[in-house]
Amino acid sequence: MTWQLYDTWVVITGALCAMACALPGAQLVLRRRSMMGDAISHAVLPGVAIAFLITATSDPLVMLAGAVVIGILTTFLVDLVQRAGRTEIGASMGIVFTTLFALGLVLIRAFADDVVIDPHVVIYGSIELSYLDQTELLGWSVPRGAVVNGGALVINGILFLLFYKELKLTAFDESLAAAMGFRPRLVQGVLMAMTAATAVAAFETVGSILVVAMIIVPGATAWMLTDRYGTMLVLTLMLAIGSALLGHVAALVVPGWFGFEGMSTSGAMAVMSGVLFVLAWVCSPRHGLVAKAMVRRALSLRIAREDILGLLYRYEERRSEDSSALSVGDIREAITLPRRVVASALRGVRAAGHVVVESDRLQLTDAGRSAASSLVRTHRLWERFLWERLGLRPDHIHGTADRLEHFTSASMIEELSEHDEGEDPHGRPIPPAED
Image (cartoon, rainbow, N blue to C red; front, side, top):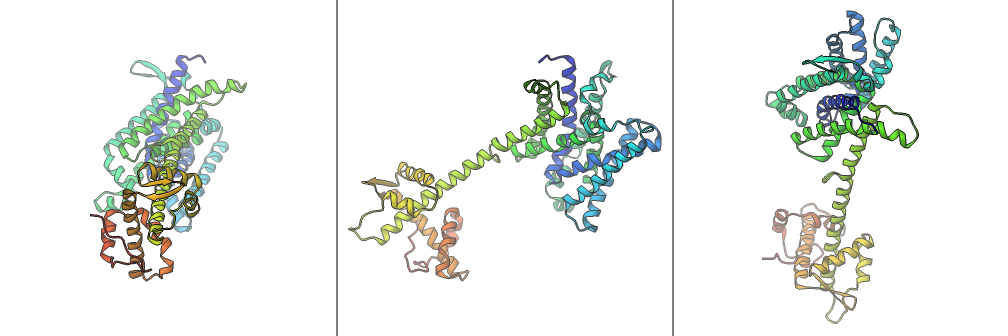
């Protein structure tokens, strides 16, 4: 791979485009209306074509005005179709954006001699050629695409700073925002106008199809990594930059692995944004697949350990002095969790000093008996509550109480203790509370 000035400017242009798209995209993700970015990015095409046909000029401000008008109209049409057509939001967006996008392509094809818009560029973008179109900026010659997308990023950044609290509040609770005197529909209209304008700025860089990835994926990836709004915005911008850089490097390197001459940089950027999302999906410290699997395993182990203690406690209640204790095999058969989980739980209760094993027989220690007594007390208090207050039959409450006993907080135990009559519905004693 040979890196040149051209490659630097391609990455800069792509990064500016991705960051400009990612800011409104993060808001759309939070509002659970991600596909509205898809709808707007496709629907603004007829706005661009109609603006040119009416004014006979390709002035960027004219194109931008047409796109903004159609972008706001798209939002209105989606809401109208959803209410009048009795369709869900996804279907409404699909109906509107496919119709408007097809209309835009028809207009471009029908008036190809007049509309100076290349459908291929509109759909796929031409970031590889952006370096050839230079313009003056503060005495420097820079790619026009970098100026256009940089301008979109600056405007979006200013709007986000000016309407920070409005955007944040309406994204999480529109009803509260309205009650506090904000205007959620107006804020949403500004957001949709921002998205439409950004999509137009990105047309020549990544195209109307791939711009969807730039709008949605960085924000969705950031949401996997954090639950804080400000941090999410910062991560969104960083992920957008990473997608642009990694995408261009992949476009230069990957084709050689398979004997190809080259690949689309904008397409590679979209692919790398997807790769970053997959990495976050798998490795996120809180919401990732690995973290969730570890939490589920820890929960299974805790439940298994508590079930072992409860089983041994109940067995001690029933057995006579001369009967033998439960064996490891008995425990494995009695607990329905996977054998590997039960084996780990057995090691855990032994390591905690709650159980001792003598000749393959398990005995509770004093510490284990205390922990088991607390657990059984919670179980029987739940049985008492389900029978006494909810009117459930005694033979129908054990399974429910067995699930609830593992997720009962100290405050809940204190409230359940008000129903402590000394015995559960089956006549078994409720262990006393620990001092």
